[in-house]
View 1: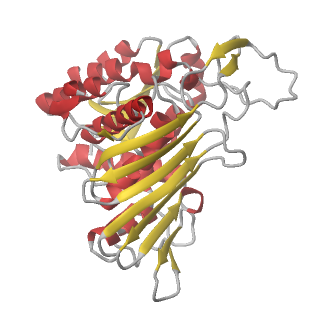
View 2: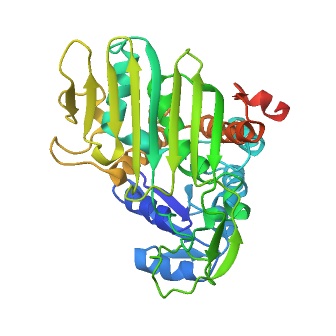
Length: 388
């Protein structure tokens, strides 16, 4: 089997995580990296990557690269994804697919015309107990789905001197918390239930309207008493917190909360699904267990165990050997390369660019709902994107 040669564009936190995941997949070789400054060369050396480019187009044109991972800030996603497909290469893109649904629809159409092998990274799908929940729902084990609810909570932007490129709409887009982490919750809920969200009503809140941007504009996490210079005041328009009501196409209703200012919550995603016969609950910080609730029996925890799972192939370790966020990322990426090699459709835990378009369309609908203070329909197909 010939190795698949991969280039990674962007070596920030998520780019480095991609490199680690790729190196744990047999038959994959990371041969090149690209970034926007000379620092990419130091990063490539530290990670043992032979070639480093300061222009992503050089990596995309490199004949020694078969597939590209796009791990850059949001505003670069469209042009890099487009260039990769036009170069005839496979593309594994970080979410959001783009910052507008119109651009996302254009990418989906381009990939379809070129018969390109593409995916977007909603890596929480790769957790085994999330796939167990999806399989149980699909098999009718909890009955008709009545409701879904949950949250995605973080605290990394709690202080006004906390900074990240996502705060700047020129780099991250009009939405921050919904686009960054709310997109994960919505994707998981739709994926597990098997039905798209078709209508939303939202309330967004910017708790910290002015942040202090450091001179180098790097990501910073500071204590309020820090001697760190406060930097330049920056007017913030994107949301720190959001509450959203949703309606699914199958008639189920739901609600979720997202926050990047919830002290003590580092990276907690929760999803609960209420059915006519049973309920399921999953928490990313306790990802080895799936709670199964019943009115007529004692609630139970289903521990991850591939010997008794409905989707055993998602697990990579024996029971009792905890699988975490980085393992879920590896599982998702491995599913993409299994599809690339076989030519078969990707596993369900690999999100398509159509899923990526839907995530952007949902974010736009949530922004419109907050702006207009009313229920807002989500486009059901890409053909309606330009109508909304």
